[in-house]
Image 1: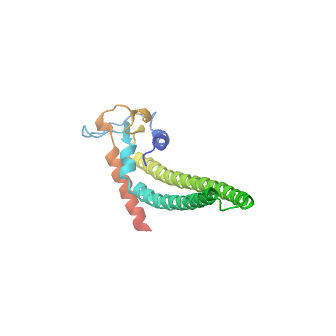
Image 2: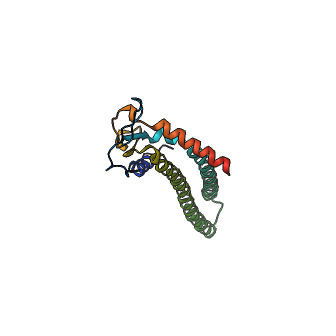
Image 3: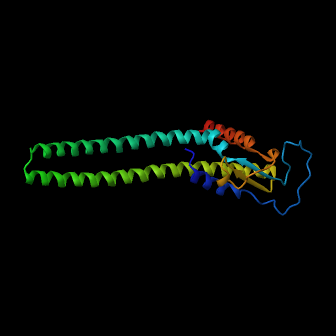
Amino acid sequence: MKNLSILCAVALTLSAVSCKNFNKPAEAEPVADSVAVRGSIVYFNIDKVMDGYDLANDLRSVVETKVNGIQAEIDRRGNKLQKDVNEFQNKIDKGLLTRTVAEAQSQKLQQQQADYQQYALRKQNEMAEEQQVMLNQIMDAINSYLQTYNEEKGYDFILTTSGSILSAPVVAANPSLDITEEILAGLNAEYVKTKAAK
């Protein structure tokens, strides 16, 4: 489910997270070299977060089940229509139908094909909507977590990157500014709490 356009949307959405401390001078806090200090510009890898975030995996599983069910029904109806068309063509080839009956059945099959195409298009739109809602839920959860997270950390910017240089605003950076694992651990811990509360 790694769709480049989806990742671009997530990257653009998340790259502007929390700039509220930008004009404030950085507070010097003694921290280890591997940890970014207050006022730093940090980044995380959205691909790793999307792959390791339990909420994203749970939602993806639910949506994939729905999408597979919808696709199976589209395929079933398409196969039935193809079978009807093949049977009709076989009868025509063998001369088993009068011209009047053949024309009536042909019109009926054309209507069935038009109905099937409308159904398939409607269901494809439904699948796309399910996937977009899932993505919105994941992005909202990540964005909400990052807002709370940055209130505590006080970074000037939190940027996002991905595995593709073409879709990521961060091409190269100091690995000590990478907060991916911290973000992922926090998101999963928050998700576990939310699930336990239900």
